[in-house]
Image (cartoon, rainbow, N blue to C red; front, side, top):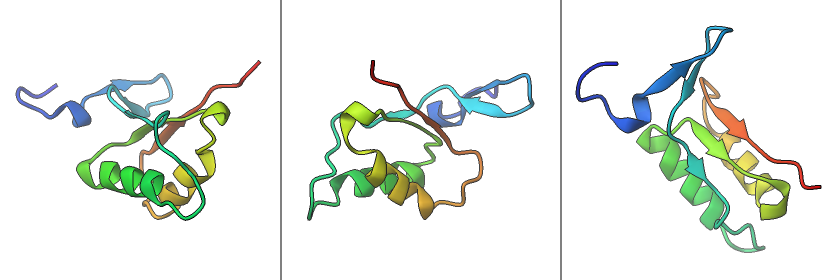
Length: 86
């Protein structure tokens, strides 16, 4: 890693050659309530800042809003992690 590189640009090399960002955005507090675009706005802002890893889960009830926001991205090197509820 280059000295002085931003935290958002640091990554781990996966066996398949992809670069997984070490730092991502958790979305657990972001709302997808009708009439609110706060979740989408936050994801858009994170993308503009260089974030390429987003964590969500069905229990957060915001996966659709995260997906809508990510549809506007280039899709280049964007990772989404999720969890399955028991």
